[in-house]
Image: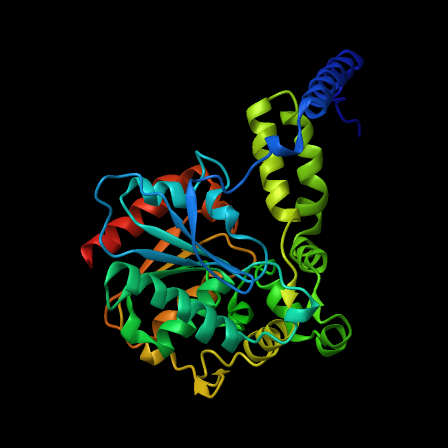
Length: 364
């Protein structure tokens, strides 16, 4: 049996020549770039409140009369919030500003060994609560809107369950709620992070280091899909090396991925044990300080946004919230994207911010 030869010498020479030209142009581009040329999180903002390493920012409104109830962003303790404002044309924050939403955002800062004893109670019932109170006072409001991203969404859900009197509407995006939902997923790639975390002996690392290194966190995320996230993206990069705009997009994403913060040890320990391993959130058993988190206490309107191709937070993990909240005003928004594409894909730009803004304004 013979097989037709798909690659002729002439075709091979042509393709090698094209690759060489792309590499030459790419090297020229990279050699001309300075570190300051690769910027993320550039939407204009001002620092309005600080506490320890936390910084609270207010983004400059883009309309004359913004929506009267401000929206506070609560990001995860791992990685940085800039994925929500990666570049001008791929930015949830900029899109919401254009929709007239008044936005505040928490930057948790960079924990060091001296912050190793910070707990989830400190982050939720002290830092987050103080930011909410600051915004309420600034605007003369009893309640504000709260938006959580990934782990920051889990924290936002906990906060709303404990302080429903301070939140008008809750928006969650790619937020893990049921940390064992991966057991029900047919796609074996989804939920691997949950599986690994359930078998992780976290104590020796926390006891020895005090904080969890950002490099280790990033490496664990990459291992979920090792070929596509560690190898294929760099081989694919060759195809765009002669396109400055596409290369800049790639470099911004790499900058965001590789410049995450370390995580405070005790908060990370509790998140792994109580959420990933014991799945206590949906059981109503999570303790923050001396308070028990009961999702049924979330009686405010909830918009739960998820990515239907999310390999880090399976859709069922996010959508499980519907079974446990006490609100009758519960809405879901599905975006055809993965965990990161949820914020930066072209389809997301057309769906996410307009959907969130419309939902908020209807409940204003």
